[in-house]
Image (cartoon, one colour):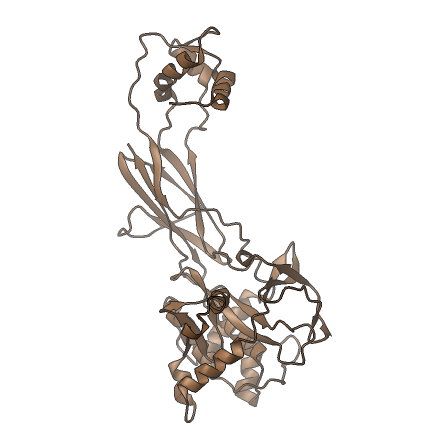
Length: 408
C-alpha cells in the first residue's frame, strides 16, 4: 500500500506508530465491492412539481368518469399515455378564445364539453390530460412553450402542451393533446428539451411527429404529411422559453428554462406576469421521478474501537518507528478491521404517491412486498444482487434501482 504524505500523517494521527508482534501474521480477508449500480442520489422533492395538483378525491372522481367512456390500462406504459392523449384530443374541437369559469376542474371541463357542447383552448386540453394521467398514477405536468418575443409579441407567442414521466422508459415524454401528436426520433420518445437540442443540431426535420391513429380516422380528408409539416412549422416558433409550475418552499412559481430567449421576462404579450423563477440549467426541469434510493447500514456501527483491537491483539504503541516500517505493517492490521457484509438496508424515494416497496435478489426472481422501508441482507461469498422499486397508490411500480456487490 503506497501512502502519500497526507495519508501518512492521517495514520500517524490516528494510530500513532504501531509495533506488530511476530505472532501476528497477515491473513487474507474478503472485500466488499460494488461492481455495478444505478443507485444514485436524486435531490428532487416529489411535491415540487405539484403546484397545480388537485385533491386525491377529485382525481378519483375524474378517473371514474373517464373510465365509463374509455378503458385505460394504467400498467400499459407507455401505451396508456398515447391512448389517453388520443382520447382527450377527440373530446372537442379547439377554440383559441373560450375559457372555462375560474376554478373549474378537469372533470368540470369534460362535463361542460359533453353536456353543453363547450369548446376550449390548448390550456384546457393540457389541464384535462395532465389530471387524467395523474388519476392513473402517472407524474405529469403542463408545459408552457414560449417564443423569443413572448414579452411583447403581437399574439400567439405561447402554447401549452404536456410532459409525462414514463416509468418503463425512465424519461419524460412530450405530448400535445390539442394536435394529438407525440414526437419520436429514431424510434425514441422525446421530451421538449431533446426536441430543442435536435433543432440546434440541424436535425429538426428528422423528428417524426406521430399523430394518433384514432385522431387521423376522425378527420375528414386527412392529409398526414401536410398535418405533420404544419405542426413542425408551428412548433418551431416556440423555442424561446419553456416553463412549468412548481412549488418551492411552500409557494407556487413558474420555473422558466431559457432556450433561445436570453432575457428574463416580466410580461406575457404585454400583460403582467410574475412569480417566474428563471434557470439556464435544463436539469432543473428534467429530473428522475419515482426513483428508489438504497441505503446500506452495517449491523455494527461501522466504527471499530481501534485502540481496543490493538490492545486485544498485543499490538503496542511506539514512537520510534519510521514511515516505511509503518507502511510494511499496515497490511497486517487490515484483517482486524475488515467490514462484515451484514446490512440493514433501507429505502427512500421521490414518488409523490408512494404506497410500498418491493425488492428481489435476482432479475428473474419474484418481487417481494415489504412493510415499512427496510430489510436485513447478509451477503454470501461471490456475487450478490439486489433490486428495489417504489409502488404507488395506483399499484404502478416505479423504475428499478439495482446494486451488484461482490464479496470475496
